[in-house]
Length: 194
Image 1 (cartoon, one colour):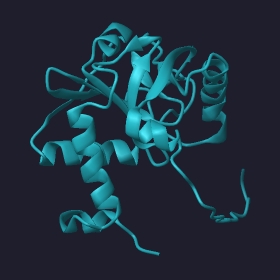
Image 2 (cartoon, one colour):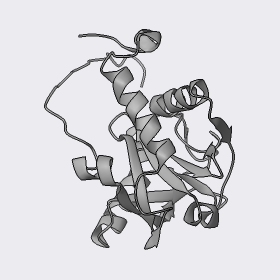
Image 3 (tube, helix red, strand yellow):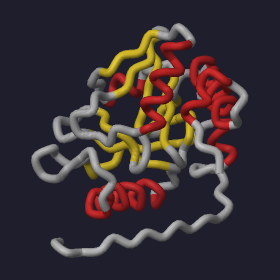
């Protein structure tokens, strides 16, 4: 809208683990939703706008009603897209993979995890992968400002890997939380102290 003044409010409150403390340590159960991510020609898929979250809200309601912790949404072509408010990664044969930014939100935490993984010497690739690839992955996890790095132990009643957070996921979690707490000086430029 034209001539619309901008007003900003900032509200703070204690915030625990977005998908639960147990989710951070033991992993969560996820389900592929019948709702998909938007096609890039329908909405601006790389923006955090209220309208973009309607299908995410519907997906989350759908899967939590079935007893799952979080939804996984496919992209418009049927490949794995992202969670309702998180990006997704899988580990196969020691390689960390995440979907390309074609129709997903370019998450800040996603970028941080890619950088951390490469700095630790892990192979990282952005590639499309199918539901089948997710089912047979050795590890899987979500990333996000609220989700941080949350392991996925099960998708659609199928156990991922050993059904526990895997070694690469744990390594990335440990590094990420050290960075967030200011313990890794090489990443100090990522932090803004309040």
